[in-house]
Amino acid sequence: MKRTGFTLTELLIVVLILGALAFIAIPRISASAATAKENACATNIDMLNSQIEMYAANNDGTYPTALTDVTGDADYFPDGAPTCPLGGTYTYSTTTHRVTCSH
Image (cartoon, rainbow, N blue to C red; front, top):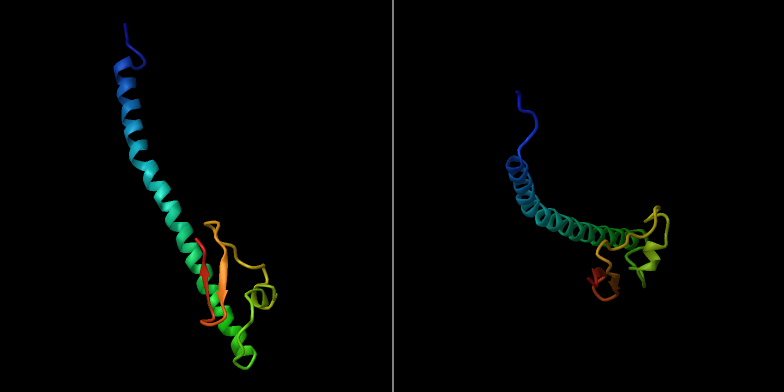
């Protein structure tokens, strides 16, 4: 007689190994997703700040009075204003002429 298939012990070992690998991999994937969102937020802030500088250059050194002056203009953001991937809101300081995120 020829034996076919797997024994219960072999199947349990494979399941335990797969469980251990999942236990190691899932937290790393979650941390990577959080880091990616933080980096995307920082990129959005840099983009907003550069467009504010471009606005000032196009308007003889006059900075916008509100963030919507830049984000609402299709010349600066043709695809619409960026949103924070972390759920925060972008705030414009009229004294420093820089954007920060509430998150």
